[in-house]
Image 1 (cartoon, one colour):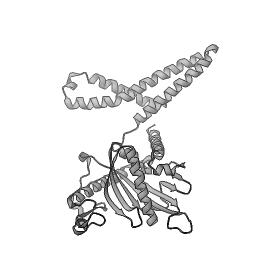
Image 2: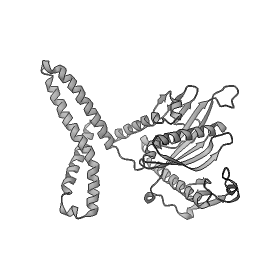
Image 3: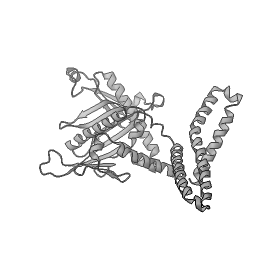
Image 4: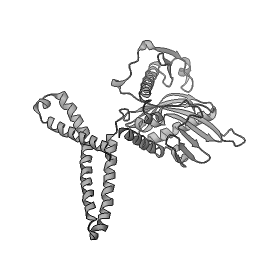
Length: 357
């Protein structure tokens, strides 16, 4: 543990002890708001201080063990004990480092996922469908719920575009790094000469913002069009103007929704997606300066711009942001996405901790 981190932990412990005294004072107890604020801060600091105290104790134990090496008869025992305590120290440091990292308030939220076919025509749409199934299976493994918000199907299968809401604690935190270009390399079923084709899709993850934090959208900034829905849904879908298209004039964001039979429900869904997009754009702008966050920004969907490559002939999947390659593409498509998500989160935390140090 370097000096800057050690000094930070000492100051946090001092603050913890200061709050502990303040919470016993009558003027604090009688002030409900102040008491609540200090209690929350105290609770937040308690865990990190607890691990820091344990770490200091282990440090003392390690120093004591080193003194045993002077005794020839105790050297073997001392060496075994030293390994055990060094492992304890590392475990405690890992926990402390994670607790020191700044918390992303959106990580606990639900999210919208938007998958779009980009380059590659029909093959790109088919792959968009496979990506959506992958995310659906992943969501099921965490008991998250998935609800389709808007869908544009392709004649050859898959989707030109699909937007869904993934509801569940921590969904945004685990999926936020999926934003960007996804490239597939394989021989399409329509390819007669067995040549490998390259197609791309883009994925965008947008946090579902709590009502109290939603972006204020001025009605005068919106252009709202109604049109007849297309696709499944019976006679009603094709005979009434229930579908909604909302354009946010200041940003140019356009959202369509035709999944519901009711125009009002489609409008409500479209507004919720629009709010998420405006919020995500604002978030992206504030994060662009942070090098460790550049990786999660949405790509353009061009072949040259990709976060990840899915190579079917070799059962290989590569995440280019962290130079990770695994030969378990079939498992990942079945929903075992943590094979990629966990290493990305670890890399991100390492980047964040490096900047913190």
